[in-house]
Figure 1 (cartoon, rainbow, N blue to C red):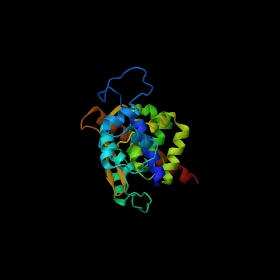
Figure 2 (cartoon, one colour; figure 1 turned 180 degrees about the vertical axis):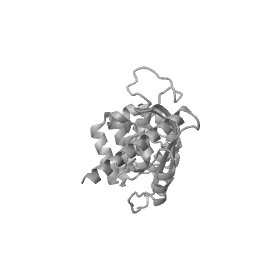
Figure 3 (cartoon, rainbow, N blue to C red; figure 1 turned 45 degrees about the vertical axis):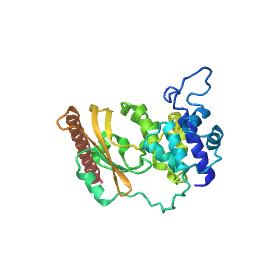
Figure 4 (spheres, rainbow, N blue to C red; figure 1 turned 120 degrees about the vertical axis):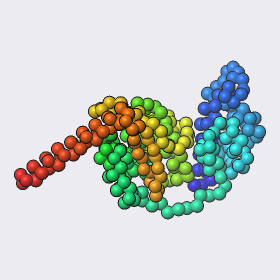
Length: 287
């Protein structure tokens, strides 16, 4: 990344985050005739203990390498969490990221075996949320969990996936922020460029979220799902990094209603597989 690229991204990030902090949150009176939704530049500078002129230079990309102390002060004023602070420090670092050979995302053989035996919906995703592998129960949970699909693209562009998510707004906000965290300095990565370019054209929701510059790690939690066959499911979701890819596992509380529904779904999936296999046998014998 060149100094020009870095300062442009640093300035854009500072502007976006400044817009999200209200005067009340910063302990300032709101006043009258405010023309910005968040803090003014001079207010950020005052609270951070730097000159307004220097802060203006940062936002306009005229300083490639502000000190760690300055960035820490800005992180405090902009009320960044640890992930967002680390992202800000990375944008302002004067140490170029060492080049590293990018390797194709591949699923370790042992994970293929795990997917086949784990007994709950599970799949493997890459850094850009491409589905690399999945088990039958994951596909029964959602056909968008087949290899070749992209989780972010499905969530933003597929009406069935949107209906599938009980809290679509939170799901989209979380995954877009996680994509930005995953990208970090790899802004020229071909897969990221392709995906971001497509979604920027085709999704207003993506454009809105991308402009916020939110940065968060997408970790485990609870997924609330409206399944078209078995109804509402409440499942735990764990995301486990393994050899450069992510193992994602969905599972219910033992003995819960969602546990029963998931067992029902597994039975329906097995019946479908058996029926499909029988049809293939009949077709093969007819030849």
